[in-house]
Structure formats: C-alpha cells, structure tokens
Image (tube, rainbow, N blue to C red; front, side, top):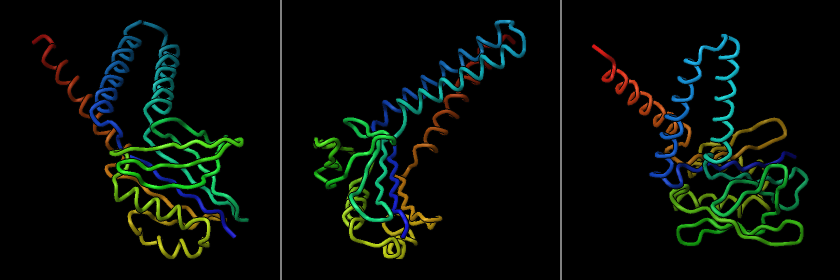
Length: 208
C-alpha cells in the first residue's frame, strides 16, 4: 500500500496587499543591497553580507508571505487523515499535524474541522486564495480519501480531474492542486516589474 498525500497551494489571498508588500519588500532589498555594495568592504565581507541579506529576505518571505496552502495525508496502513498548512486563522506546522475530522465549503470559505491533543479547532481559507470550484473539488477529494484506495484515486485524477493531478511516486500517491495564477509566477512578475521600475528611475535620474 502507498501513502496518499494531497498538496494544495492557493494564489494571492489579498491581491492588493500582497502586490504592495512584495514590491515594497523587493525595493527595500535592492536599497540595502546597493548600500552594502557601496560600503567599501572587502570582497568576501561584501559577499557574506549580500548572502545574509538574501537568506534573511527569503526566510521572511517564506514565514510571512507564503501563500495559503495545506497538506492532507492518509497513512499507507489506513487510519485518520492528518492535515498541516497555513490558513487564514492560524497554522499547523509540518512537525505537528492535526487529525482532519471533516472539510466542507461554506460560502466563500473552505473549513477544516481538526482535532489535536483532545481539542477541536476549525481552520478556514477564504477566497480568492482558492476559487469556489476549487474548494468544491478539494472537498470532494478529501471526502473520498478515507475510503478510496490509492489506485482508485490515481485512476480518477491521473489526467488532472478538476485541476487535481495525480503523480505516482515510490510508496506514495501525490495529489497536487495549484490555484491559478500560481503564487510563484505572480511573485516573479511583481519582482520583475519592480526591478524595471527602479532601473527606469535610475536611468532618468542619471546625469546626462
């Protein structure tokens, strides 16, 4: 038997705020980077400082700017579904999964009733991180997972049914869903536009 793992990643949950914070954060990173380059430090110190800056920015982006997402796992031997993820009202880290009791769409939200350490809690993710059709498709899959075999799920989703694609890995059936437009492509577009903006500003401000 194989483990079954559903990985679902949302898009921008607050588009205007996400765009503004990404552009501002990248602008500050550029400013700090140029500042480090103009400090006149030895080459190896400059490289270390730039590396530390990039690592710090990547950590902050991953910690506070990552998209809404969740992972639901069904053990190979059966048993309760386990869930981790980043939700609108909290987080379940990968090293502390909770039991997923039930998932359902309610209006513009996808709700997850969980149990951890004998206490129950409901997490939710709202539009536009996931669209309503995506929420319905993900709810249907999570309803299927407790009873369906990995082979049955692979057959149903191997061609990308409802945007959910099945991948066969060693001792694992991976079911993956990414809400369009994807968070990474959107972030790259924002960063590229911000960089072009500052290059244009520098070109205009440069003396003739």
